[in-house]
Length: 305
Image 1 (cartoon, one colour):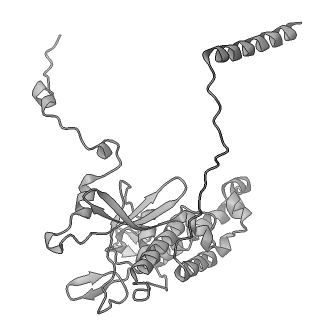
Image 2 (cartoon, rainbow, N blue to C red; image 1 turned 45 degrees about the horizontal axis):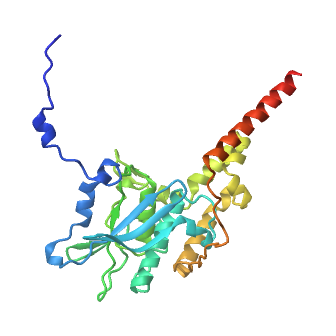
């Protein structure tokens, strides 16, 4: 038998340090989190706000959060499941829905802190990055008020890959157009070509208004109508056509700006009449199994006859 060198010795295992639980679960990137949460000491414990974007199987969630020693605090949040209030009932997880959710979160936050009249955001959606230079500082808003500076938040993407055209940047663009000051550039927006280093803002605008969804709807309807009926069943049920998507999203943006406040919580009262069934005893469970066996035997005998 050849000699095999032991690479992990007893000293290695004695000094082994277990990683944090959320790192082991693959839920938190602590290197990223440290840089997003650590505040300069001369800021005297003023919170460092994060614009948190997360995607589930059914919705987009946007939150404004800040961290304390005992955990995070959520200043405000918005979900794409709220968009049916504003007229959008289908496609609640695509790029256009992410933009709407980011816009809703931004307008709701500014209304809460009293900056919604000062920073109204970008009404003319053209896909370009809006920024203003004041002294040595760059603010990502149209104009900077002399008395009140814009609300700054840093994008928190979690463990998601930040590829070009990712839906995360749709939520970022929505929040930036809503009036939040979020540092960003056009390098990860749809329409940016890394080789030529050119940015096509019109392509990004088309993505914001669901143009890519409309094109695919038209293509699928012509090529494979059966697949179209299955994949866009919700759109067909709600009478949403490919030609009317831009008008639909424009209406949603207007309604969000009119009233971004959250809906009233419905009071919940549990039904006290419900009572759990009593747990069966061992004899009762055995009797139930025996009854099933007898019924099956009787069925087989009847088939043989």
